[in-house]
Length: 462
Ligand code: ADP
Ligand code: MG
Image 1: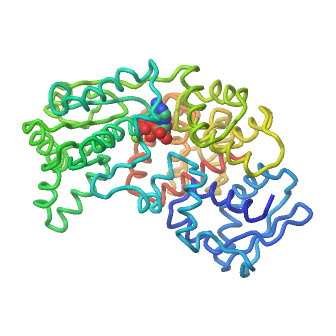
Image 2: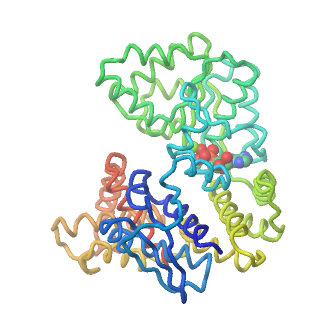
Image 3: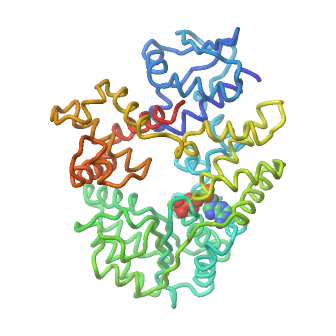
């Protein structure tokens, strides 16, 4: 395989676990210079970048390269200039083209600046890629789909608000944006606004700061269709929920349609006020469940078909059998396989697909042990594993301990009492407190987010 292609794939992978600014900072002007005797020579522009790549991303880089070319044994980093190669980070256009070409990482691509600039209309915030045409309906989502169609036919009437809930990666965002896109197609003049509740909150904070609340109110209250994604993140008591409530009421009274999504039903969102909850319950509530095997297979076939790709049926079946809970993961796995098939000359079979999938952190999740997790966290923060168990309250220990508990909860789904047990027989309330503390901080601290990402990378690396 070409060294440029190899490096491109590495970049694609690293991009998943990094914020855009860090990605650009550390990987700009990097590339593969040589591949010789199983050793890949990577050129980086500065000593700083060299250190980072070596210390933080070496494993990811090496793993990705090995997946693509198993004969690779090591990677070395040198400061220097790339000869005759254009690093795609240099040119935004190239990234856009590449994203379009591979359309990989469906879940994350839309978050990148480039994608937004490319396709998303800032007025509506709708991503045109989410349509009904490419939305597969099965028994798991047919109620939600039917409700969506009904809303399209008669907006602002009986199904108002429409409240869609279900687990992560099961098509809520796709479905509610498809309503917006479809409505826009039939009536170009319609004013539609899609928002996640998190973005909505930050817009309000911004508007308050700049004394532009009037403008913001006007903007939201004049729409014909408001789509609010992931309402579970809306803040509790402050101005924000108040503002949403008023916006909602104002639209509702004018018979304008409101569509809301959440990861849980209204009665289970503890942060929302009763009056808002009862408003939600006054409309139509539909859940999205888990797709069955046949539907998963159908989704895969459809996606492979859309990308003009003929992946053998047994491979699609293998994926559909093994990735059950999340359509985004299903799609991610398929994309990785499509990409691999483009990059290697050897034919795809279930065996090498297994490797591709299980080397990938998301799907490999279930295969890591608590032991590995705890050890990785200890290594990462350079402390002893026994420090997790003892009663030390030193900051250098307390925080890694909390992070380890958090990861045990999030990644391995351990119960709080068993987390407490594992960490030196601590009480379950300590475990709850630790997990919540980290979860809260994660919402506001991008550095911690990055740290956790790097940690997960480490945990899931072999
Ligand atoms: P959620 O918002 O529930 O977390 P998304 O709407 O983001 O999930 O869906 C995750 C990915 O799976 C998206 O790329 C989406 O296009 C795809 N997807 C989800 N449901 C379907 C479906 N029924 N048919 C086709 N693709 C789907
Ligand atoms: Mg979503």
